[in-house]
Image 1 (tube, helix red, strand yellow):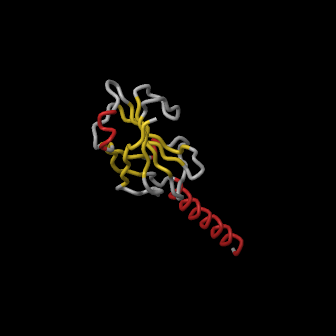
Image 2 (cartoon, rainbow, N blue to C red):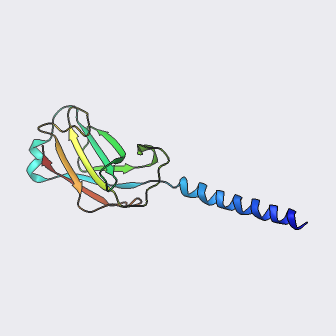
Image 3 (tube, rainbow, N blue to C red):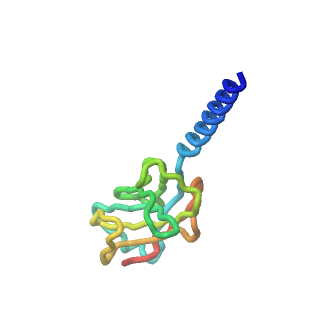
Length: 139
C-alpha cells in the first residue's frame, strides 16, 4: 500500500512538473511598437518596392526573431510574435536589441549604400508593447 501511494505521489508530481514546463515553453513571445523616420531622412526613403525588416537580437548580436513589412507607411506598427522566431519554441527572458533595416533589395543583414537603419534606444524585454524605433541612419 505504501509503495502504491509513493508511486502515485511520484507520478502526480511528475504530471504537475510537466504541466508547468509545458506552460512555460508555450508562453507567447511578443514585442510591439512603432517605427518612425527621422526628419533628415524623410526625403531619402527608398522609392518603389521597399522592405522593412524588424530584427530582434540577443545581447550577443544573434538574430532571434524577424518580421518583414513590405511597402510600409509611416509611422509603421510592428508586432513580433512566436511565428517570427527564427528558432521555433525558443524562450526569451533576457533583454533584446531591436533593430530595423529598410531597403529596396529585400535582403536583411547585407547593407548596401542607400539602405536605412535604426534601433531602439534601450534594450527591450519580451512583452513590451510601446517600443519606439527611429530610422535615423543611412548606410
